[in-house]
Each structure stands twice: as C-alpha cells, then as structure tokens.
Length: 625
Image (cartoon, rainbow, N blue to C red; front, side):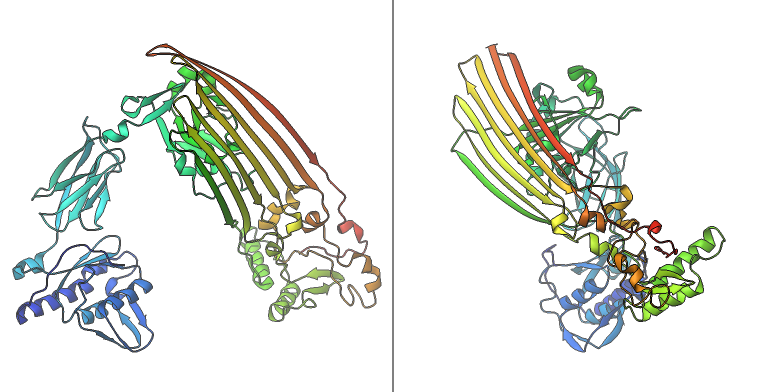
C-alpha cells in the first residue's frame, strides 16, 4: 500500500555523506529493526522464487507478502530509483533492503506496529543523522470542564504513529521532531491540532461538538437535546441496522451501544434474543423494559427496516418515569414516519449466504483417535488403555487402506467399527440461505404524515438434508399516520402486524439432535453394515433384517430422516390510537390507547423411529467403539 505522506524533493550528496548514509541504513536494518517482538528483523528472511530484476516498490511487495512488516512512503519516492537484481533463494530482509538502497538516500522510522516509514533525507549535519531518535512528549486530554477523556486518539499528523489516552486521560508518544503536529480526536468533541513546538508536556483541552449536542434524544415520554441530557442514555440511529445480514433487531444491535449486552443463544430466529443493560439483574434474573413507540412490545418481532432510532436508558433515573418495571433499564424504540416532500417509495431486497461457526475439526484417522484416547486414559486415570493392540492393528489397516471391508472387524466374537464416520458433513452443511424483501411508502403534508411498509424474511437452517431442514418465515406490516385536526388537536394511528411461522425437525432427545455433532465420536458406527459375514462364516442371513438400519446412539440422522416435524404459527397485531392536545405553548397532553390481538398455534409430533440398540442382539455384538 502507498500513502502520500509528504512532499519531497531530490538532491545530490557528496561521496562522504553517501558512505555515512549507507552505514546508517545498514545499522538501522541490523539494530533498530531488531526490536521486533517475535523475531529479530536482522535474522528474518524472505524467499525469492526466481532470478529477476525488479523495482524497489516490488521489493516492498515481496517483503509485505511474506512478513508482518508494512512500508509507508510517498507515492513517487522511488520512481527514478535503479532496479534491484534479485537471485533465487532465501535472503535476509536487512540484506535485501541494504541492496535496494545502496544507491539512494533515505531516512527510516520503525514504528511499534511493525510499520516502516520511509522518506527522503533532508540536508542536515552528520551528527544529527547519527543521533536522530525523535522527541518524546506526554500530557493529559480533558474537556472544557476539566474532566479527563480516556480513549482519546493522539496521532502525529501525516503518519500512522499514534496512541490513545489511558483511563486517567494521560498519554505518551514519541514524535519524529520537535516541530511535529499532533492531531487529537474524541467522540462527541471537535478534533484539534497541536504544535509540539519543543514542548515535552502538553495539556490538551477539547471542545464539545455543538452540532451533535443539538441532536434530539428520546427520553421517557418526551425528548431533549444532548446538551441538556443528564442521565446515562445510549442512542443509535436506525441506519446501524441497514445493509446488515440480520434476522432480528437484537442481532443488529450487538456491539452498537455501550452497556447494552445482547445474548444470541443460537442462529435460530424463532428463539428470542436476550437483552441486558450494564449486567444488572436480580437473583431471579431480569431484563429491561422494551417500548416500541411507548408501547411494551417484543422487539424481536419488529422489522429492523421500520426503526427510526433506539434509546437505552441505563441508570435508575428511568425508574422515576416507568416505575418498578424499569428496574433493569429501558429500551425505547421509535418507528419511522413520513417526512415532508415528495412521496418516497423504497424497495429493497437482500440475499444472504451464512455459514455455521464453532464446528469441530474432526479426527479423520481412526488410529490417531484411538491412540489419543489411550494416552488420555493413562494420564487421567492411570488405568488400562481403552483400545487394545488388536483394535489398534485394525485401525492401522483402515488408515492404510480406507475401504468398507477394513472398516469392520471381528474380535473375540464381537463386531467392531474401526473407520471414520464423517458424521459432521453428513448432518451439517457449510452454508445456509436467507432472503429478505422490504417495501415502504411514506410522505407528509402540513396537516398529515403517513408511513406504510411490508416486509418478508425467509431463513433456512444448517442441515444437509434440505427436505428435513428448518424453515423460518416472518411477515411484517406497519401502517402509521398522524393528522393535525387544528392548532391544538392532533390524532395519530398505528397498526403493527407480525406473522411468524417455523417448521423444524422434532427433537426427541438432546443427545439425538444436531447438538450431538460436536460430541459424536469419529469411530462411532452409524448404520449396520452389509458384510459377507459378521461373527462367523455363514451367519449373514441372521442379520439381513438389520442391514442399513441406524444405530441408536447419539446419531441424529435417523431422527431427521424418519422423524416428524414441530410447527408453530404466530399472529400478533397491535392497534394504537393517540390523542395530543396542546391548549397553549409549553403544555402538552398526550393520551394513547393500544390493543393487542395475539394468536399462536403449535404442533409437536413425535413419530416412531426404527433404530437398532443393544437389546436387539442376544449374541452380544458390540455396537459402539
């Protein structure tokens, strides 16, 4: 990467100065850069694949691709530099750089983040060139009232050299010279440039950004400006939820608001997301009060595209407004409304491919698995190994020739499985699809505003078997209007409708579900094999009824293939009618009436599953590993 850092000019130097510079560059490459944390810079190497002649810029690209170092320099700094002749094979970075700059004149600065800043040297006394070490400055960052600002960014202008203030607002930074300029920034405050001007201790006072202080914040049943805000309130605009592959509002708010902790138990959109503010809850749990347009509502049922803003009241001041229900904080959600101007019609579509996370990388070699299990048994209990030498020999035969015949063996009259079941790939797919469509129409005049939207979300599960996969659908509709009857009377009406349907495999037992993927042994048999014989020659006819049937262990495959479905449908409708009376300026009476119509139906069916367990065999065939 090339970044225009400074404006430079070229000049010629005497032979003596050139010799000093070559020595200086070599010392930098072999000493200054040796402070790398993981490996000495002077010892680190890169590999040249073939003999070639390249530019200095290409040399940097080779080093950046094979190491952690990055170079910053003016874009045209090496436009006239001679080519570098590279020979095939390994070469130390220090030697490669010395070779590249042997006919050039540059200064280096090695930053703590493995970034090497390069710029052309200026004419200076020889003593200055050998003694140049930078200037260390320190100080404190505060606001206009003397309050410290932890986490403020302090960066040397024109470079990537920077730091942050600590919890007490203090910072320390080494800049390139006593004439450097540092840029100080902090969220909610105006950025400020400060001239070092030979100072070593600098006190920086940042001014609040008045434009942001004038933003309107929803608190309780009213609004206020940030400049007048005294309580702990977190604010997020609806834009943070746009253009994100999310199924619920809770997923989109993760990491957005400080102090708002969101727990997503799994990727199933049918399961609610848990909200918590500042970790506060009672011995019996507790969650914040959630209000959508001042009406208690399930936030996970709201279409993220319909949200205008979200405010989180974090401290006990919220209890003064909402009472005991606000003991664990309040989340206030405001939906969108029409704005003056032309009629606004918005149509959006989103097609998303998601992938599961935290899948276990299975052991595919049964010999490695058995040997590891034996080692663990000896270390943990000091007892006998789990698998004897005969089982290890059978596993070795499969590892060397992984066929179905080698996957099974008979020892002491018992049938054993010694292969790899590849269970994870037979149950869980590596991708899932989600589709989303939204249409909204809004507008406003002097006497009325309106906003109408419909949305659809469809999401699949992560099962390989598409016919048995989970399918979730959600339909949302919002109708919202405000009418100004006269100067002192206004009416507002709103209808929110949500329909969700979920169709998923029935869960027979926790150990026989998709959750078993990470616990299934890689040498656990899944289905009864079709072999020439089992315990003894000629006994195949005795086991024909069992061939192809699934074993009754943690195997979820038969439950998915033969099992029934759990289905649920939910209809949730909210009707709200509001009345606002303003008899005179500064006095407002507002009344809201809301009615909720809720209907839910569900069906859980557990059909009979045909599996094989140990009780089917009187002769003691070993079904497991």
